[in-house]
Image 1 (cartoon, helix red, strand yellow):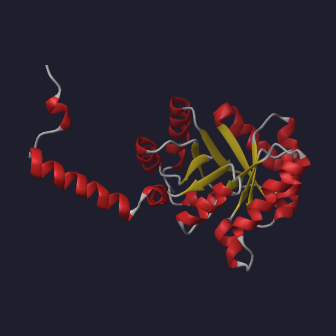
Image 2 (cartoon, one colour; image 1 turned 180 degrees about the horizontal axis):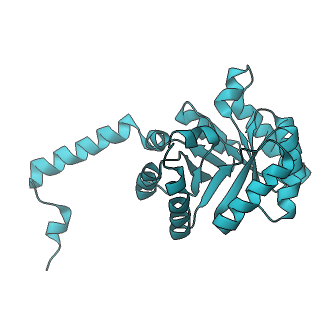
Image 3 (tube, rainbow, N blue to C red; image 1 turned 45 degrees about the horizontal axis):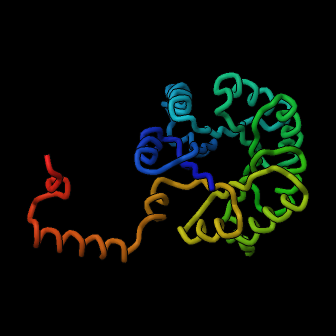
Length: 228
């Protein structure tokens, strides 16, 4: 499974990457508004980070017509090169833009997906990723994980090399369930990375190790016992 950081703040991305293996980071227009006043500075910093760490950066177009989406995608591709994934919305103009972008060799993610049929048409159009919003799907009375399972099965049955990029999570268990149904990627907040490894039993075991060691060896470390 590929893991992406769902945030535009570069320092937060770097902090996550310091501790966890990541495949890149995802942005959208709303996320970028949180960095208002710094976006022009961040654009080249994103590229530098992607190049130095060999990770992908996802940018969503803001145009509403397919030809304008293509124009924005081409400019982003020219700047970010192989590290770019362009996000196109799962709307009529977006589906047209998928084929236009693929004809130009641009990696595409169809985003704001809320149904298997939206995802299926995106895969058929040539999208490299589809991004279903798991908690949003739950909110409308469906099951986000089941929807992803259906997408994965449909892509396999149809022979589409499109990956499912799960987004919008409330719990770590949603990610666990996605992994078991074959979801290829997720994009999550920095806080969710910490939740994925958090476990009370692990903490209790580590406390037991520390207590036993300190009672026996005090402040010595295991490396202190290596002969010189």
